[in-house]
Amino acid sequence: MLNENHEKDSERVESVIAVRNLSKSFSNGGVRIDILKELNFDLSAGDTVAIVGASGIGKSTLLHIIGTLDRPDSGKLLFKGEDVFLYDDLKLARFRNESVGFVFQFHHLLPEFSALENAMMPALIRGTQKEKATQAAEEILVRVGLQDRLHYRVGKLSGGEQQRVALARALALNPLVLLADEPTGNLDKSNSEQIHSLLMELNREFSMALVVVTHNTELASFMSRRVTIIDGKLTPMP
Image 1 (tube, rainbow, N blue to C red):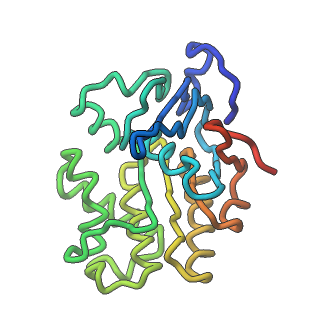
Image 2: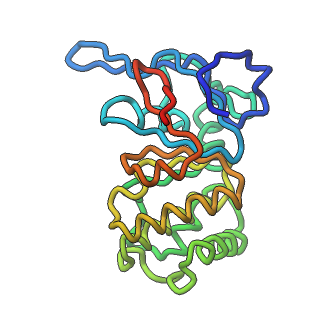
């Protein structure tokens, strides 16, 4: 369940994510701009949420904090009841590698490496044996429809195929949460629709929580919940 009701942390340990009193601001020319203001929400396994709205309201900022790529000014980020921002940088990086998958508009693949090598990266970083990392990467690449592209350099793949590699890489370690920032922003309508369907299928199969930042109304319509950010807080949308 995603909501703005503040409850005691002990009552929300069943949530995959519990954000408590999260605030984040930036300075622009010496002027403080409050982006997120004591924001609260809960996200459980299998939930799907679209964060929509105009540029600059804090959508990507919130996504990056949930993914621990950025830190808030104040507040807690609880994963299964534990505040991960109390971790040191090494433990936080290990947590991020093992528990959070990321898909971005610009997929940040290594073009000189194959689809298989890119998808193996999270497992190799984790310290998984190469044989096991290869097997896991192959399985997820086959699942996303790239069984004939395993050994192609990603620089030779189409935009839609590259985004599938990015999705496979994000799911290689079966994360608790998949975070997607404009995942179809660079794709044509046909490839966008395929990625939409694939995201929802994988959400159901893996029972992962899925949070998507998007301007794509069709993609947002697939999500069980649609929210925006108004005055620094999440607001439900129809």
